[in-house]
Image (tube, rainbow, N blue to C red; front, side, top):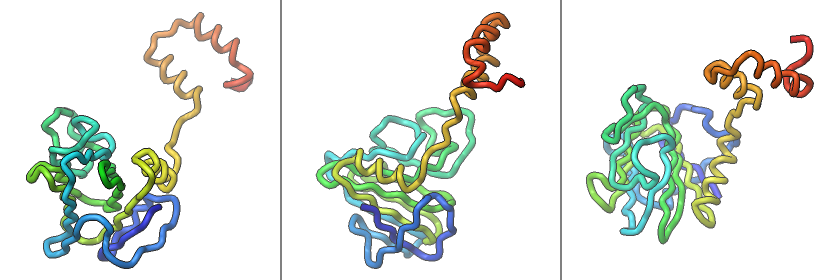
Length: 193
């Protein structure tokens, strides 16, 4: 089940492929403060594991660090970096209570996941103009399936595109390319090329 909560007047990022109606009321998890921008705070259980944030550094459990979603193109990816080039503002808190949160916000977001305070998940941004999607399901896998469904399918190039890229860098000799083309010419590449 996915519910959308709106704060302020958010920019439409078109991150979701499906329209989800806004739910009235307060978030079922944590607390929201709009006194200084936007701050979401959730007190985590001792055994809670936090997954998500896409291509962020560190391990699969994001607990114990502060991440900044700001799409920084820093060529040196080391463990002490707080921001990488991707903005994947989706997390799952897995424990006694398991739920997912997607913060649909086009600017800088800070995820303090037990960094300042070991038991506190704190997500903050400058302006309170965002949509938060709360995902609930049977388990973390179910939540991920729901999320993947509403954001749409990832682009995956056709198989032949991988072969051409590999032949460019793989050093395949002309004779081997000729053999491969003879074998797959009808299936992959038209005879006119």
